[in-house]
Image (tube, rainbow, N blue to C red; front, side, top):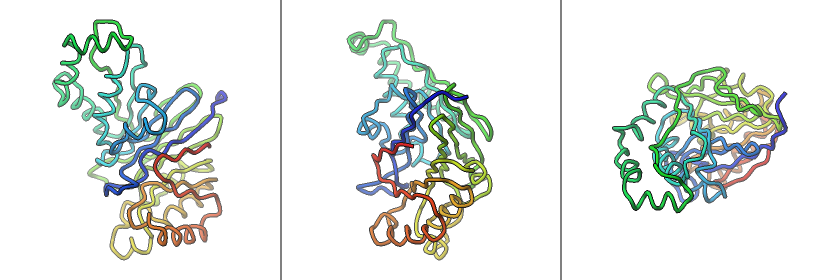
Length: 291
């Protein structure tokens, strides 16, 4: 039986590849007691993490839904910031995601990675060594150590008090693999769909979940008219998945610029309400939700 764990969700990125003053990219943190699980690492996720009152060295687990830039572009910043701000006593970062996760990680901080010049300078220069010691570290300073694993559907990781499983999400295959994740803890079950069209695999994963964070690109009627319905959920698509799965609370994320406007948002909520009978939250960046 899973131990008692309070579950909190921090919405760091509630938008899309289109930057707006209020939304940009995808990233969420699930706080389970002392464990922080990050899901995706889109634009400025590291900065927004700190704005939410958290810190990179607190995050020991990172799960990628897929590798579009609006879900992973801040990964180099997060990796280097977490390592640079450490004192050498933190747990090794555990990273999971579909195919390319290992390659991208090695390409960033491996011995010949694109940012190896940075950590090699910080490991070896006396100034950086002194900053490290002043922070509480003990020399010698070691290079970044990250455990990155390409994963697929099924059990992904068990944290003792929580368990993460994954299922295929229907997005832009075969060019990129995509996963949705479900986290089970004593406080409930939380599903992160990532980017997906309505599909049975995600519905099955989300069955009777307490919370589902689902992408919601735009008004479904508009998406049908302009051809942007493929590989994505809009308003009624998200509602249909939530209703079919019996989800108790639907949190709309990955919201596009048009749907973020007041009038389309209100219409979208009305359309969703005609299909889905649970609680709906139209997320905004830096929202803090208790499961």
